[in-house]
Length: 364
Image 1 (cartoon, rainbow, N blue to C red):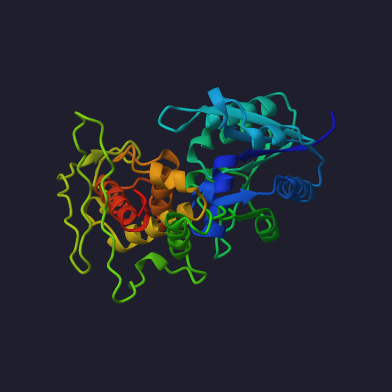
Image 2 (tube, one colour):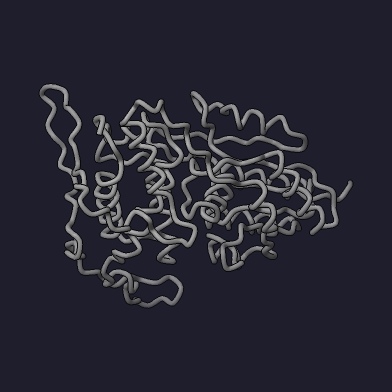
């Protein structure tokens, strides 16, 4: 049988990581991908590194079309040579389901059947570690392929997954630079539409600055009153939903009391161990504010006016793609896998406070 390699691409990891390099946040809607440029570059890198021909590139994502079917971009991607589209589904809450399982099953099946000799896994998800170990048990080398961060280190790769793999290869810098770009800003409405002009100006002001600073924290021009939150009209009989108040500058946010942690039993040592240090740590307000500013800035610059107005309809629920980006970016910013519950509450409260400040609505 001919020796060959294969490439398994976790699209969620790839696009979120690449978006972070380009826009400063993992929000996927903030970037546009040139698949005609990206796919050949990934295939070429795998073949050059392995000195083997590529059997195929397997692309794993959740179906973004109606009923979990592929959307237009995914359908076109599935028609590309040597690309196999493997879709999971989206839950009603907007969470991916079945994607990691499908990837892990394919990896193990191909290894068991000796279909490949080297597998390149483009992912950082710790949930795939057991599949990697199983594939290795059938004699297949599994090499991680990761997106490099600004310091040239692998972005968002779980330490356990890295340790169990046979090696780690960074995607070429030029691949990300040439194939992933910031989403084009929607065309502004007609010039006579004052509301549209204000929205476009606000979106431009909210974009992350080139130096990485948070432009949303810049001082407001003197003499211009700062608009406060404007409640949306409610259907008759519907109770109002309390919103997070905007905290005055210089006044620290209250920190929710943490429950006293009890010691846990460690199966590794057979003894009781101390609770992790983060249980006693206060929320990192600076990091939370930075993450909220970047995510909202990127989102504002890539959506239409109707999307901005729709944001508040389901308040206090945050759209799943935005919420996922907030949590993922804060996790990367704090270098922790599990974000403490108090930090999650503060993160979402700060998001709505910043949204009230930045997102125009009700025609203003």
